Length: 382
Image 1: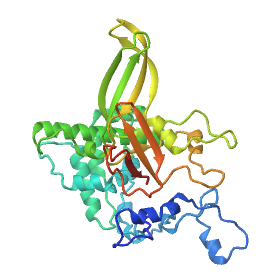
Image 2 (image 1 turned 90 degrees about the horizontal axis):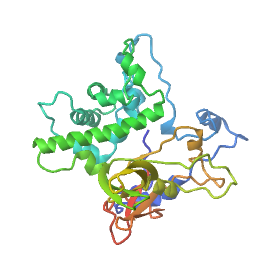
Image 3 (image 1 turned 45 degrees about the horizontal axis):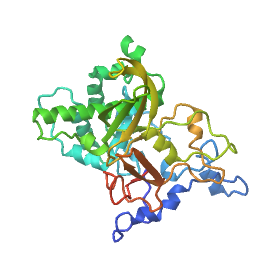
Image 4 (image 1 turned 180 degrees about the vertical axis):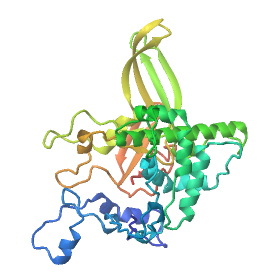
């Protein structure tokens, strides 16, 4: 569903409407007291979650009633149940579990606008970039008519790495022992792996096209321009203190939760900003070969971001109930996820500062290089 910003106005400055509704976005709906309810309230509380939280009307579950004349799924007109101007994706084909991820990518303006300008390569038989651009064009022009991501998912099946990572499903009525054996049965983990794989593969295709001269020069892909983060990995030998540095591109941040669920009254709960900072600056110890010692030694590894993307993709990484408990509101009803955050870093000192931004943000990734006189980069969390 789509909920219009009640504070929106054409005459307002950029970011002003977002700042005005920031307290409203941070406040979550409280459980409805089931006493002294009118008939309208009783009807309204029929569609609630298990904890009694009332969902906004655009997010209610819609029951589709098919007549006997429309026996086939493909013949039914679902557009009359869509009250918005946006198109959906049909979920009756294999690998349609990624539809939600594709919709998120479509509503990223920087990515979708760049892909809508993308010119396909006529010599490439299977290209995820070309097929994703075609899907973006369909969603942009469909006007409530459901679309199919069949071409994109068909191209995904041709990538051997996708099958090896367990990202693929077989179509109903068919069998493929290799795909069924490798398939990740955890749907949450499989969707998160698909997001990571899709961005890395799109970036790889973009670099190959740039080197081949198909679409102009440059070493930056579309995905790299929108989601890419330059990360420096430092590995220090604990014996000789020799440091090995290497730099690579990262496209999303995987949240690393503290071990065990947070118990009420067991001390202060870590904020979202603290967990995100720990996830960005990952530290670990591993056994690896040290050239100076000429032996396997314990290395202390640390990741330091050198820049920040236009859009920061955060993988929630919820695998079980312990991880989910961190997203529960506090005892006073305050949400764990803030409306916007401010990220600042010093790559020379290897320090990252993340704090909740009370100004309402103003868009994803202003000042992507983290400068701005020490103010850093502001991200709206949506």
